[in-house]
Image (cartoon, rainbow, N blue to C red; front, side, top):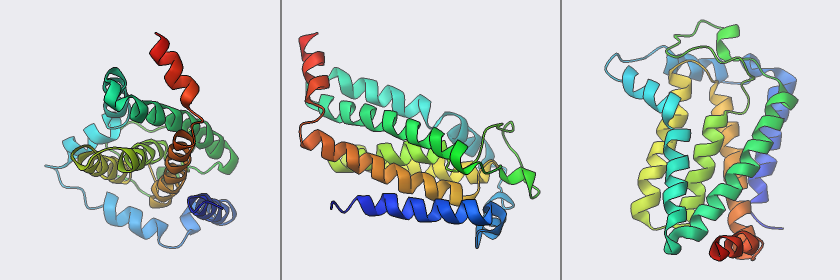
Length: 203
């Protein structure tokens, strides 16, 4: 059994706790949310708002497109794209399965962005950027994956900072994202994404 399945197991354990207890009753969830969200700094707010709103699609989609253009990085782009598709499917299914409400329904939140109307767990932003960062860590040189890992961590933190996610949402997103990333990397290394690569070469 491959070691990366442990991340899926941890995600399922956390998800069960979230579902049974509900997020306000998950240990340290409220306390950590308040520690982050209640200590905003005015000079950081614009940065956090930008990261929260644009740090996912406006960074990771263009990056994947650029990597796809060059033959040397095409495998990385294909692995990223495959892992993103898997992450989106599992993330959206998880949101409806666990059906957890956003923090501002339970506690006072200093909201810096408009209220989202979908469910909270797991964080889709943390899922995608965490997934992307781990794919790059597994497939690309340090000059690329280190800054993208920093970006992913900042985006994840910003979602709690601006008041729209619990810390458990972010943790759940990262656990699921690490699994989807490592699973996709493994599938690529075992040749299961070759069909996509051949189709792109044919074009």
